Length: 458
Image (cartoon, helix red, strand yellow):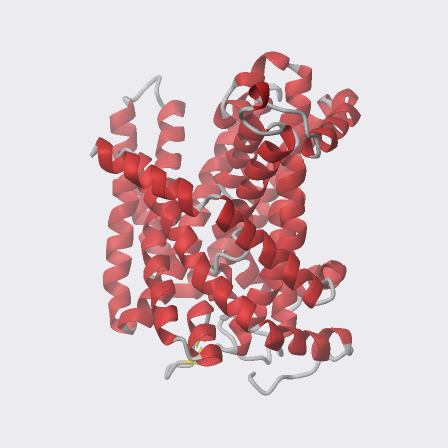
C-alpha cells in the first residue's frame, strides 16, 4: 500500500506538473485574446447573475446555477490552498494565483457558452449539458465525452466527497475533543453528514441549488468579513505586503544556492497551480450545472458563469493571500508553518471568534462542495449508463460520505488529483477546437449588442 501511495503521488505530480499548468494557463490566455477580453464585461455579468430569465428554458435560475457552481468551487482550496501556495512558493505566489483567476474568467465564460449551446432536453423536460455534450454534438467525439464522464464520476467520489467529508469530521473532532473521543466524533459526524447529504441530493438539482443558494452567499460573506477584520488589524503592513508580493512574483533571485530555481519560478509554479485548482476554470465541472440554467441565449449564461472565477479567485483568493502575507510580516515566526497552520494562526488574531469563523467556513465550504459535486457526478453517470443508474450512484455517493469521515485520505487525495487533471484534458480539447464557435457567438450577442436576443437553441 505504501508503494502504491508513492506511485499515485508521483503520477499526481506528473499530471499536475508544468505541462498541465502551461496547457491550462495557455488556454486561459488564448481564449482571452480570441474573445477580445470578455473580462471587460464582468460588471454586466454580475448584474445578469441576479436577474431571472423566467420564460427561458432551463431547470433553475441563473443565480441558482452559479451558486451551485460556486458551492462546488469555493472550499478548502481558497482557505488553505492559498496559504499552501505562499508557504511553498513565497508571497509572490499570491499574484500568480490572482492572475490565473483574471485570465481564467475567459475560460469559465467559454465553458458556460458551450454548455448552453450544446445542451439537450430529456423526455421529462430537464436540461443536460457539459463538456461531454459539446464533445459529442459539437465535434462528434463521443468517445472523448465518455472518457470525460468516467473521470468526472470518479473525481466526484474523491475531491467532491471523501476529502470534503474528512475535512468536516477532522475539524469537528478538534472542536469536540474535550468531551468526546475523536473516533466517536468522526463516526457521529459520518452518520449525520451522510443522512443530510442524502436528504438534499435526493431532490435533484432543484434541491441542491436551493441549499447552495442559501449557503454560498452567507458563508462567503462571513469568511470575507473575517478576512477584512484581519486586514484592518494588519493595515500598517498592507503596503509592505503588496510590495513584497509584486517583488517576489518577478524576482530572479536564486533559491538554495541556485539548485532549486528562482523565486519567480517557485512563485509562478505554486501560485498558478493553486489558482487553477481553486477556481476549476478549464476542468469542465462548472458547465455541467450551467447547462441547467434558465437563459435566453448562450452568452448570457456564459457571462454569469464567468463571475464564478471572479468571486472565487480574483476576490476571495486575493483577500486570503493578503491576510496570509500581512500576518507573516506581523508575526515572522509563523512563516515556517504549513498552509493549514498558517491560516489557523492568521484567523487566531481575531479575538474569541476567529477560530470558530475559520472552522465554520471550512465546514460549510466542504459541505456545499459535496452537494455541488454530487450533481456533477450524477450527470456524468447518467451520460454513461442512463437515468436508471443515478439511484445507485447516489447510494454509493452517500456511503462514501460516511467512509470519508472516518478514513485516511492520502491515497484518495492523490487519486482525486489525477482524475481532476484527466477530466480537464477532454474539456480543454472541446474549448480549443470549438473556440471558433465561441468567438462567433460572442461577437453576435456580446460585441454586436444582441445580449437580450432569444437564441434558436432556447
